[in-house]
Image (cartoon, rainbow, N blue to C red; front, side, top):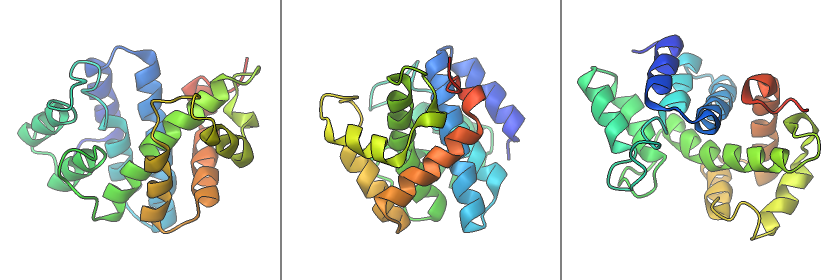
Length: 187
């Protein structure tokens, strides 16, 4: 299995966009948080978080993303459970999330993007100041970050068997721990 460092290097080779790289780092942080919470392999879950959108910049079409990443990982001999988890984050892939890792990547992907958007509209541009209540308030504003599926966020919490408030709090905690790396520590 790829190490975290190898996964990060591979992701950087495929992804030039700083914001997309930071998104994958935010998802990695959330995956690590939940791996610890569920007593799972933190490094394996981190690799899934880092690589889940690796091909999105080059292959954004539903016919190609995330299939290009999975094709490469299979050619490299990576474990099928990593490939399945990456496929499971795309609801159109035909892979229904079944394992805790598959459910978690689907649950955290959109929420991490949404939390980033909430942080970036704050005067400080800091996730450190974002609270659960501000995320929920912005979720009600359909014009805000309209490309983010609110249904995916709420469904994610349901998949994990926790309340939406707890899910948001967990992802906030994970992202706050790496705020500097995400460029969200404030101006």
